[in-house]
Length: 393
Ligand SMILES: Cc1ncc(COP(=O)(O)O)c(C=O)c1O
Image (cartoon, rainbow, N blue to C red; front, side, top):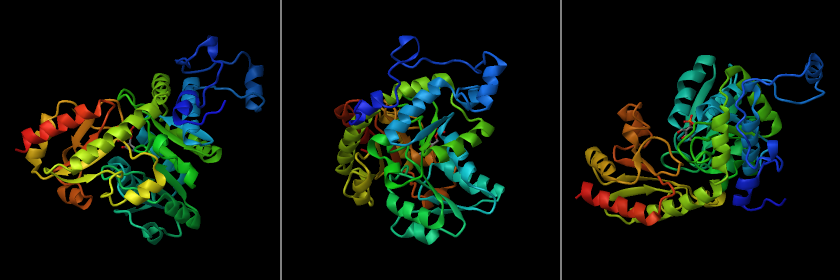
């Protein structure tokens, strides 16, 4: 079967044509363990003569089906699902880092990835470094002889910076580091990092991959050898997905291309509207020419994504009033689902940071992050316009 277009791949990629009991969809295998018929079968399994699942922590058929689809979407040899995006990130880092190693985190990372890097990894004897803002040549200046992991998000959150992937990969090759890209914000519809030489892609599948704000999951995608190494660590740490969550993810991914295509278009329209609005001081959207990484984004991204961040010409209180005046987006953490979500970043995602840390990260009190859902763009824009008028008269 030729799976060329992104929607065909999202629906059919990784799918077995014949499924149990002639079912069209993959069933939920709600089981913790998988009995053997006899000791003979068990010994044959031990000797590697037969391959099969033995116990839930090592895999589940529904999970495997979702992994096969994600691997197909990312163009990777293998994928591995986790209980959450953080389980994927931390299990991956713990697989490739040991005492005495250095790990480099590029630009803004999800705040808990950043905190894990700054507080937790040093307890294990791993030195961590951060590049606060991406600019060309930066990564080369920060790598060391003992750098074993280079970790970046593309695009970053909330300023949607786009680090140069080929530069990251070249730096990783030079020092022998594993290059890991958290591509949650991009999705395989807008970016396939493995194509550019990145070693492993991680996702919070809670966001666009699941797409319906109803599940938590994470994923790692890459070559068999590295994903196999992460799987071994997962067996110890135990951050596995449950079969029902894996089913929801598999179902959600079938509409990924449709949803993300719509979200790309809506976010672009919203970003243009905001850019022209007198009460908006600045808009961060990589599809706009005013974004500092617009040219890099055009090189790597086939769509600019569904998140738009913007700073109002307003106080913290007025910004809060604007958010309260919105009717369509929910005030909630997360992004990437069918419902639009909004947050005042300083007091939600970044509320655990001290004001001076927030300032250093460029998180002002009037910064708003909007994740557009799949509502009609005109309705969303009308809602934003009305709320801006009401709150900032
Ligand atoms: C870019 C990114 N990576 C990882 C995570 C962690 O994912 P989860 O909440 O599924 O653990 C998040 C969560 O917001 C995220 O935004």
